[in-house]
Length: 385
Ligand code: LLP
Image 1 (cartoon, rainbow, N blue to C red):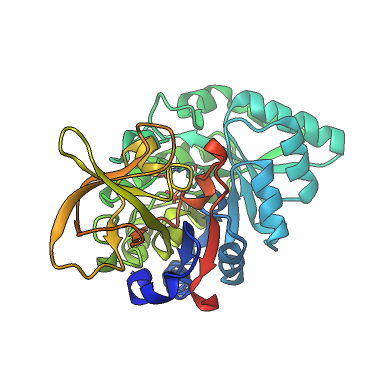
Image 2 (tube, protein in one colour):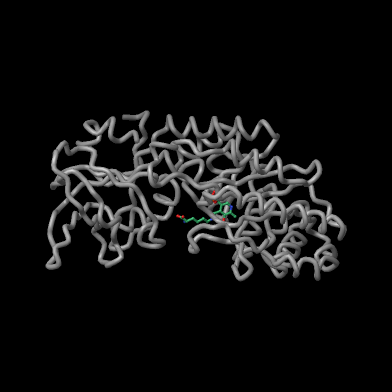
């Protein structure tokens, strides 16, 4: 990844920080946009993955819309210059004030996740004297074959409305005067690497759309969510995710008439362009013989390993030691789960060395916190060095 090539210029910088390879982000966006154009697919970017202002700006300049998960994200997308007509808003727990704000901004669609939410959107739209475009977020009951912590479309999940509930309540949904159902939405999970899962998704969506249309819903668009995974094991082998394959699969299996097909990728767009650069503070060995490397970042900068047991490839970018060792890389936070990885083979590592924790562009900085009163991590951009 980029950090190794420019390690000497990173050495004097205050750590930790997120390094963004803006060239790689550009290449990724070029690929996503070109591949989607082959089939006329519409692309949204899931803002939750990373809302760094320069990252957002480049994504907007490539013409993507924004998929938002809160009123705050809708506001952030609008402030970053996204056209409200390209903003969608999903989320199981939208507050009245957030719904009101989104409606006032005239966003493309609110993706509703419960029958009760539809009634609230209808009431707020009526108070504002407008008719609001919504999509039904359907829970399709699909196993996305990913880490269970990040699947979202299985029957027992809190996300979406069960298909059966929609079928049983179609007349009620159609009776609302201030909402119109114009789309169907689903998102089955994240970090999907087994692409055949997208084939099952298409088979389910085909049936759902056909039945919804049969029940009298006029659907203009079908939003199949995000979820495309990235290569965390050896990111150098796949810096740009395989958009061509996923789009080809969707194109050949999805059968939804002439309806627009929308995607909302987060990780696949920004995951590989970000690295967390951290400095080694101390080495020590536990009574059990485990060699610890204590770095100057923690779960407050990157929570994914502590929260989901997620793997990030770690490299020492400044050591040229010939001898290597096996280390457990731990952070500064007062939590035993604050550990980036175990059994990492690195060249002999010392105080002052820089480590990169790779593939951290998605759900890294955006999930950072100030626990232990750590400052929020800053961004360093490759084209400003
Ligand atoms: N659309 C909806 C409705 C979503 O909930 C998500 C992600 C996306 C799109 C984007 O999914 P992606 O393309 O990034 O897979 N923090 C976790 C991931 C949580 C994903 C939440 N929803 C992680 O670090 O793995």
